[in-house]
Length: 367
Image 1 (tube, rainbow, N blue to C red):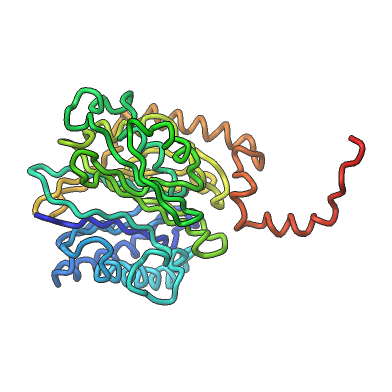
Image 2: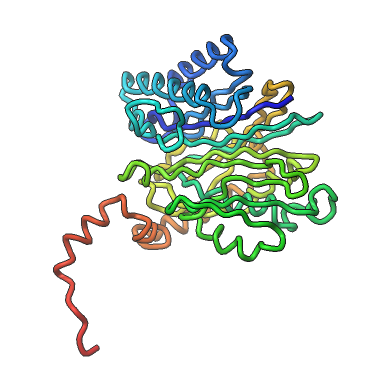
């Protein structure tokens, strides 16, 4: 059966500050999504949260970029924003950058990842959700999953993976994209993936079959809003097993420290912590950045799960190393590389300070 899996997120208000999503907003989301399921708009759904971001995971028969599904998500986020405003939650509706829906959530603030698949005999998928970080945060994990044989031995020993994968990479500043093939274009691809503030992996495809294997959100909120609105808090869907990396290979990509932009005021680099659902609460310096992993089996469009994939002591060493990195970076205060470079802070007070100080700069003569 063909089914579309959509993961759409929005920050509709934090409790307390930027910490978590309030239970009443989740309750409202579940109420509205249950109505949509009863009406047949969606086949199944889950409403979750990572930090202060509300996450809607839906299966449906409407295909990618469906106005019906995107409109449903917008209505749910808008109703939850009303709850957030009533509770005076922090930043209520900050990811809803428009007064109304215009047919598609792209460009309106919410993050979006979705794919239409033909269900296999066993269809394993993992939905990753992050908070306090930007869309390029998935670049390194996706490279490890689909192009690094030290992480994914199936690339070497499994005939179904040995042909490699294609990476669709988006230039989020200029609105362009390029498709690069691994393994033969790996070095070229890393030039772009390593600049995660500008380039972000959108989709990954199996080269032998052409089927989609992973889809990520690549929206850059500050560019959409023209002002500081926090970080993008991306989502990622990954298919596992069979012709794709195994569940363990996909999760292994998070066993090493990944330093990402975001954290406090969206203006600092920090480690991305892989945590269980219960630890998806951002408090220390409004972070550190973290991600959760919800595992599902798809069965005739039904979501069998979620299984909390990072709720495992095997990830304790990864979390400990990440927290040590957090301590080191925090000790640097306002100095780079903890604070983002100036060109990444154009939506903060930096341009104002630069303009005010411009007349005080003098030419260096005779040095």
